[in-house]
Amino acid sequence: METTLYDILIEQGIDKTRAKHAVKAFVTRDEARHVLATKDDLRKLTVWIAGMLIGQLVLFTGLLALMLN
Image (cartoon, rainbow, N blue to C red; front, side, top):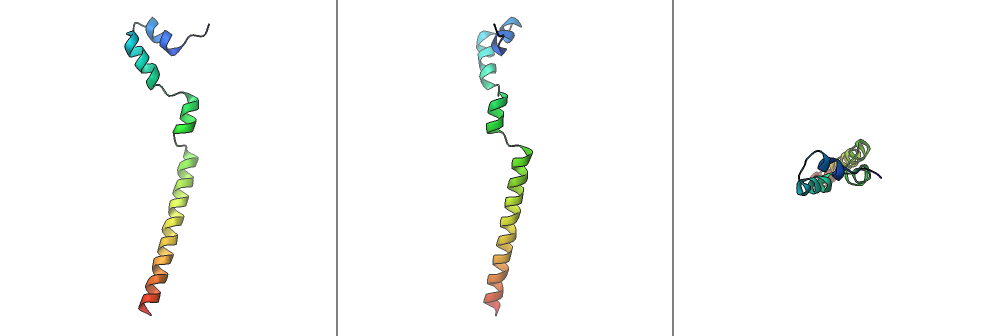
């Protein structure tokens, strides 16, 4: 039989209600992969934001040049 986190907490003398809440708050490895951002995710987002910033700068500069000529 597999020992669960809940069982371990109960064995350590933690109240059943507190143990249940602690287990619910615990994030499993699979949940973390789907919910939390990785370094690669942050790099992709940073590159995308930088690209958008450069695009806006080019567009603004072009419009300003057209307005001043």
